[in-house]
Length: 385
Image (tube, rainbow, N blue to C red; front, top):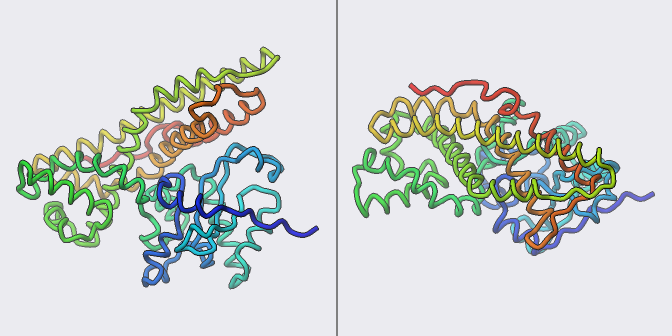
């Protein structure tokens, strides 16, 4: 039997991913290649060994009904790898493979084409599996996860998406306004405009000259400040995510608990209801403990805004140790919110057959029960003074 061809992806869909894809869901390597592909760091520290993969889009993907027959044991979501026909013209479309589909390794090999060696292919396949196992592609979780596995890629592979930067901008501006007077001696309308510019530079270019007074305040070398700014962005990103959850979680909880389970078996309905309550309890626990971690950031930043730079400097140095527990936790909640919104758009009836409900809730429960904030809280205290 001939190998199945990879699935086509429409150009309009790929263009929409580029325009509005969230950091948590989309790893847009095509855009990284477009912006940094000619740079020395990109060439010397690629994410993958195969260059076609370094120009792909990798997505957290909710499996559609028509795709379920591609899997021997379909789950609610997977990791989808899209190979654009042109990494700079996504409107042309591309082809894709999904982790877990029948004969995935064979299809993946075919999609990559010729590789330098079997060792390179196996290394890239293993890295794809690692990406599949984490709940989110947020760059802070991703970088620490890969570093712990001994994989160090160029810094350009770990950026917040343009769409999320746009959504975050006003939030970040409000967050850093208290610092403007202390570090830059600005007040009034000038302080507001400066905060706007600082927010933009902090999120897109930590080496910008505009940030030099802040680097001097923190007494960090240029290299140390670049790492510190990355850590700062990480906590701003997680704090923004928590604020988004705060605004939406009550509505999610109402729809989640209000979903009718269709079954003639009372025991099956009871089991599913217990599992649903377990998932919701664990989500509340994650959000509460995530909020506690953000309070540590708030205390350190407040000290900086009052003129004491030492606590914030210490915080930034220690912060990356928290990216895995925070990123796993908030990525799991983000995944559940996103999947539920996909499964139940505004006009859809809140009903699930017992079999499908069991599959979905079991996956949610496995994801939540495996993360550190659920198992035992933060594993290391952040340094505050």
